[in-house]
Image 1 (cartoon, protein in one colour):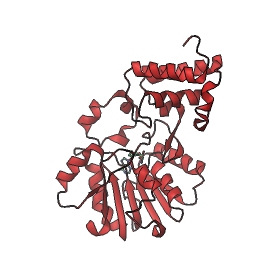
Image 2: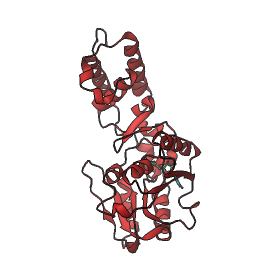
Image 3: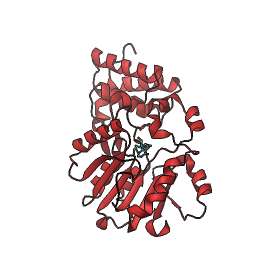
Image 4: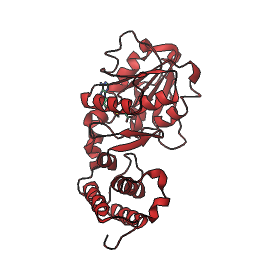
Length: 290
Ligand SMILES: C[S@@+](CC[C@H](N)C(=O)[O-])C[C@H]1O[C@@H](n2cnc3c(N)ncnc32)[C@H](O)[C@@H]1O
């Protein structure tokens, strides 16, 4: 790094360093360049919307040291960059993240951006439930996209719930997003929703064991589900009819567990959604199909 002076040069150097380190991406950034940018901009306290103008800025010695320290941790400890910077983006919104929650990355972001259309008439959505809210990203993005809706954001992890509350406060959505502890539908007796959405834990134990070290920095409760990854999905499906409005929809991310889901419920008429910006393994069912 000796002699590096400008932000752009520091960014190129950091990218090269990450590329050589053989890291895993997919925690809010897709490659070494994006990861390096997240770290460099955070450490130098630059705004992402100032790039590429800021590339010509001169880096102070202190700034360079901060960048180097974060890169070291990223490489040596395999900590996802979002945990190092404490922030990430989801559906165009900024969220606080800590290692108490999964780093937001669900393709459900795209559905939120589209107000869940064309799958539901967004103007008539009044109540949304997000099961396993983690940082609160899906619940909050849905609330932004559906300004007439109230959203229940649930989780079993007290630490996740605390962070979700912080994000709800930061987004000034306290009046419409309720964060509550609930084991799947456990605390929601009698409540019905127009949209039930969930990115639940769905990774089988054997697969978790083989994941790159970055994933082992995330809470296991956010990734692993028993019964071949199907345990929580099965409970979401079992209770959906009782908690959906007659014209409501259920949207669930299942990732690579999609194949096991198809095998386990061969007669359910799942619609497997396609995404413009990548990702898959998300099914949709309407109340009548359940
Ligand atoms: C894959 S993470 C998703 C977090 C967030 N919705 C996102 O998309 O980034 C799954 C979340 O489900 C929560 N969870 C695990 N078991 C649960 C259960 N039985 N009931 C409710 N939430 C649960 C975990 O604590 C975790 O926050």
